[in-house]
Length: 66
Image (tube, rainbow, N blue to C red):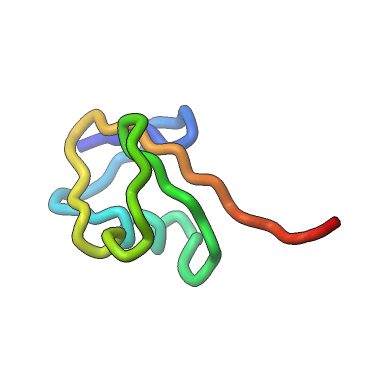
């Protein structure tokens, strides 16, 4: 199956959760906000939210500074 991550198509093996995809993409342990199909996925649901073919994700990394 394929999902779109920040506008780029990414092949993934089903079943795949948001957390598994983030690990695959190198976001493991980093503070990120994730939106799937225009809906925010809370951090505590990343490990249980299963992706579907054609889902559109936006992943935003959080950075501090001033």
